[in-house]
Structures are given as structure tokens and as C-alpha cells.
Length: 432
Ligand SMILES: *Cc1c(COP(=O)(O)O)cnc(C)c1O
View 1 (cartoon, rainbow, N blue to C red):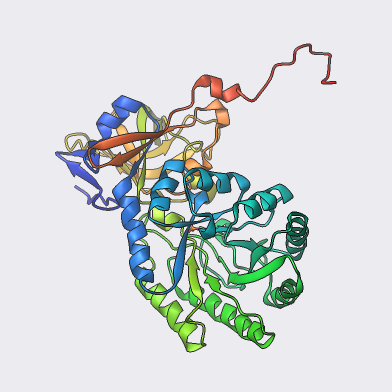
View 2: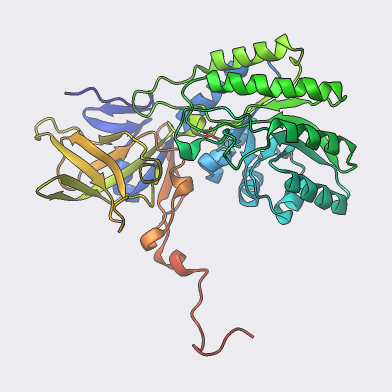
């Protein structure tokens, strides 16, 4: 039998049947139905622990990137560990608030913050607005003045480095919409340092996602430090440097970044230029939550065509869009191992009416109808990107903690599909 690679020790086969911690996935599927997202609490806490260890005694904040998975119970687990959060919308900010997150450890990223979102973040007292353009900074200054509150800001630098990742998840190239070029950043810092309602507290960059090589971090760190030198000449001193997120995970056979080496090398760079007292901020999303999550799905049909065989599963691009969106390769495993069945090569697809609705291609599996499959490494950018396309019901989510399970999101009911919609009372009468 081929070696089956599991994300970590929190997912294991016992007598040929897959468990998450001490709970059988077969039992979870029978109890809660499929498609179903299942998360291992221990896996999440372990990933967070690795960051804490790597950052050790350096002054730091770990700001979990909420967009990777925004379930409030998962946020709550992280908040209890004193984790901070990076948000990109008012909705994410309120989720963090709801989950008991420390507002003083929240950074607010994103190129399109609205006035309403700015007011909300100011009133909640976040750590920093990550500013992505001059008009955004001007708007924030106006909003802060109107509330008579000082807005702490960090300018997001676009360092123009190639993160060597998929173009859709690359953000630090000069053709991307993110951040500002170094020359513009200098002028923004000068302006902000004179503005009564803005307080420059940090500098940040985020160059992309699923990076497997640390070199682009080092390159962008050097560029940011050059900028800090120029700011120092102007008498502008900051208190934090934010390296963003983007640390890659192992979906298939990727050799990814060694966190200890990454953090130590970056801190060495800070030390070499006299910035060792700056608080280091990281905004990891994927690397904290990807391995903790699994998507359970049941095979509905096995369809043989002259060219190909398909496994038609009850999960689709609506539950997990990464394959459709980035042609991402995700691990797909049988929940129960049947050594006696013949091995076939299948494309694993969902019921959605799109040819891009696939979960995996050309996978050799020993399965039969009604079997359960599991997509591992599905905790990041799975549920948070889920949609109701084709009027599908959003999945339930289960958190496993040892022998215990908690339903942290119930499955949509059909009424949820149209609860915010209304029928016209009289077809020819518009709202007055
Ligand atoms: C998406 C994003 C992150 C998280 O990226 P991961 O690859 O999930 O670690 C962090 N910071 C910003 C600004 C982002 O847009």
C-alpha cells in the first residue's frame, strides 16, 4: 500500500479507520452529516505554540489572520492564548470582539476600509491601521479628527519582491494593488508625523501566501529596514515591524519554512541595524489553522465515462474553492481503508454546475459507493471562502477536543437561504 501522509499526530488511522484526536470520523459523519468541517483543537494550539516558541523572548505579537478561518470558537481558542488578530473588514473585527479578543492586539489590513469600518476600529481601540494608500490615510485622518481620537497607523510597504507563489496569492509585487512603494511611504510617514490625529506606530509588509522559501521575507525585511533608516533621519521612530503572514504549509511534498530560522534571521537583521527593540508582529493565517481542519465528504456516485472515472462527492467548490480558484492540490484520503478493493484513478468532483467544481484530479483510491473521503489540510481558506452557490447549505463545523466534540457551527437550514430576501408584495408596486 502507498504511504498515506497525514497532517500531524492528531489525525490517525486506528484499525483502518480515521480518527481526529480520540473521535472517529465515521461516527462524526453519521452524527452530523456531510459535508462536514472537523477541526482538531490540539492541532491548532500546537501550531500556535510553534510560533510562540520561535518568537520566544523577542518582543512580539502574533496576529492570527482571521480571513483564513473566522469561526468565533476558533478565534476564542486563540484569544485565550493571548493571540492577537489581523482583520480585513468590520465583520472580522466584530467577530474578534465577540470571541473575546484583545483589541490592543488587533491590526486592520486591507485596501478598501470604509469610513464606517474606521469608526468601528477607532472606537474599539485597535493596535494599528495598516495603511495601504494615500487616500486611505487622508480618510482615516478625517474620521479620527471627527471622533477626536488619535489613529495609530502603520504603512504597508510594497517591497516589490517575488514571493514565488501562485499569482493569485502573491501580493508584494509592484503590479499588485497592495501597499505603497517606498518613496510614497516616506512622504506618508512625514505627513502622518505632522498630523494631529494620526500616530505612526509601525511599518508592515505582507508579500503573499503559501511561501515555502524564507528568502523573500529576508529581501523585504532589508527593504523595510532601509526605509526605517530614512525615517530615523527624519526623527520618526516606530515601535513595531510587521512581517505579515504567508508562511507555507505542506499540502503535498512542499519543503516549507523553518519558523525558528525565519524568526532568528529576521531578528538578527533588526539587531544588526539597531532595531532590536522593535516589536515583531507576524500575521499567520494558513500556517496556524490549515492542518487543524479536515473536510469530510461522502461519495454519492461513481461515474465511469469512456475517458475518465469520477467520484461525485457531496462536497464541492462551494465548501472548498482552493482547487477551483488556484488549482491547489489538496490531500484526499479514504476515511476507511479497504485493501481488498481494486485501485482506480478518479477525478473527485462535486455536484455544482461548473466544470471547475473539482476537489482533486487523477487520484488513485480504493473506494466504493457511499464511502467517506476526507480532505485534510482544509482548515485554512476552506469554510471562510465557502459560499451558498447553487443554493447549497453552508456546512456544519465541529471542534474535536480529545474525546469531546463541540458543534461550533450548525448546518444551514433551507430557510437560511432566503432569510434576508423578500417576495414582492405586489409585483407592480415599488417600495415608496
Ligand atoms: C491573507 C493575509 C495574511 C495571512 O496570510 P496566510 O498566508 O494565511 O498566512 C496576513 N496578512 C495579510 C495582510 C493578509 O492579507
